[in-house]
Length: 128
Image (cartoon, rainbow, N blue to C red):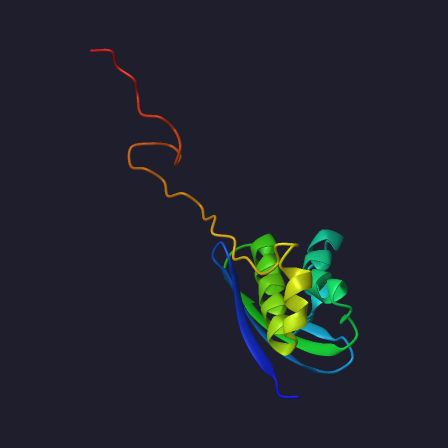
């Protein structure tokens, strides 16, 4: 099997995933994924697509991720791994699609408005 390259995005995080045959090693930015993502929730998000398709011990995954925070990065990796698994075996689509793992989450941070403290703070109301 050749190496499959896919990209996943979430907020401002971008993850490039390289999926190849192996025995379940996941490397994120040249570190083990457990060292990179220290909380169990983030580790679960990274492994979610692999666990649903029973491929946790089948592939070696090398990830380059940048931008955003750790949650956005973990979800970007999850999307990229899901896309790679669908390219590898189209039957995986019926497993991952109902879980929402193939949908790019479009929500982004709203920009700050000038003259205001935050994005959604209302302007000063004046009756006259």
